[in-house]
Amino acid sequence: MPKRAQGNVTLVVGTFLGDEGKGKIIDYLAQKSDIVARATGGNNAGHKVCFDGKTYPLHLLPSGSFNPNAHVIIGNGVYVNPVVLADEISLLEKDGFNFKGRLHISEKAHVIMPYHILMDGIEEQYRINKIGTTGRGIGPTAEDKFSRDGIRFIDFYNACYSNCDFEKMFEKLCLSYLLKYRLEDEDSVIKQCLEQTAKYEKALKILLRYVDDTVSFIHTNLELGKNLLIEGAQATLLDIDFGNYPFVTSSNPIAAGMCAGVGIGPTYVTDVVGVLKAYCSRVGEGPFVTEETGPIGDKIRELGHEYGTTTGRPRRCGWLDLVALKYACRINGLTALAINHLDTIGKFETIKLCVGYKSPKTNKPTKNFTSEANKLKEIQPEYIELPGDFGDISKIRNVSKLPQNAINYLDFIESFVNVPIKYIGVGPDREDLIEC
Image 1 (cartoon, rainbow, N blue to C red):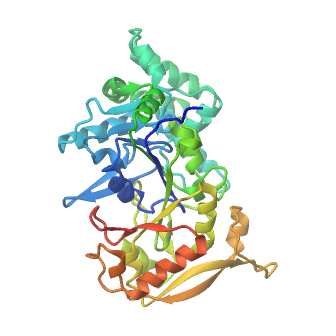
Image 2: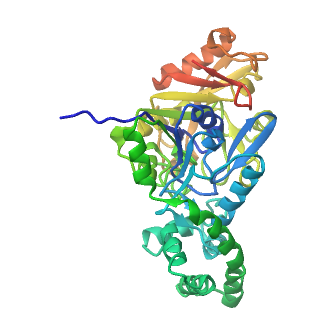
Image 3: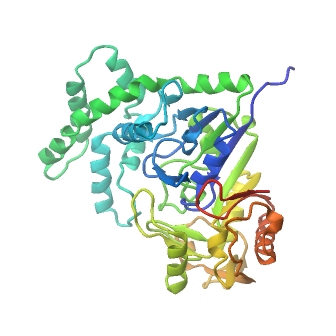
């Protein structure tokens, strides 16, 4: 049987609760990629890419978009707010980045409508257990997708070329959706939705020129030996199945979900890079085993500039949880790790690492992670302590030049999870990186 010819496929996945600095690693790897693809999530995620003295916050465009020679894919697994995406494209084009002929939006990607955003806020208001949604309409859009009531780009594309009346189509969609719910002040809600008609029409006219059969595009190029980089949004512990349910996102941001989010099988994957920080952080509600709510958490937050890219909310911070990291390595089949903020954690004289859990109810220790939120709320972390005080490592570009305390810290992580560390972030810019 002839061997299948294909280029390399690399997945970049978050190992914890998001905000691990995936944008930096993706931007670096994208410089060697022919195609960069976003596979999951929506504009509830945010990645920052820093270079040439500028910081670019992205919410829908792949972080790999800054390679001017790479094709840019927004996959079928992404929930797209067309107004946000059109604005992002416009802002980057003003800075000299050109997307003509290289941006491809999956015809199968679902569109976030104004009513999804309104319902997101209403649903969160009435939840017994608040989940800390970003309010961007991702959950209600996912609900429509899986109830088979969703609106995809292909629907607007077909309507556009059948010369439909956009305003009437938009009004029909809004009214049809809202009829499913008995809302207080329903007329006001309908009015708020319809006020977005002109914005959506303008944005969709920009985006429809990029709508494509991205599955065929990807496979055709892989067969030509082109390299594909797939980037994840959110992270493992926010996965709808394997995360801290119900404090999770509305998709599968693990490696397997990323394959489904662009339309490739698992045997195509060459490498799976898991991104983490040298500490842990979380935005929103939910359990956080190693959280530090006092001066230590405050110090990590300020040193690491831990404020949400999408919401600006201060992130909850704590020590690195190796039990959770090992779980992420297993779930994703990680082949390599990329650790950011080594320079940040190195400013502490002593660094803690969580190496086990203990339940106060049973008093039994375990090194196995549980994704059950109620159990995680009760668990007590078991720590080991390592010496810190790494000094200024921001200019180091060779792992052998790192101080011994930093090397010991990295070696302990590798030995615990049995996955090699390949990339080490020592600062915010794309150049502040050590490749091992």
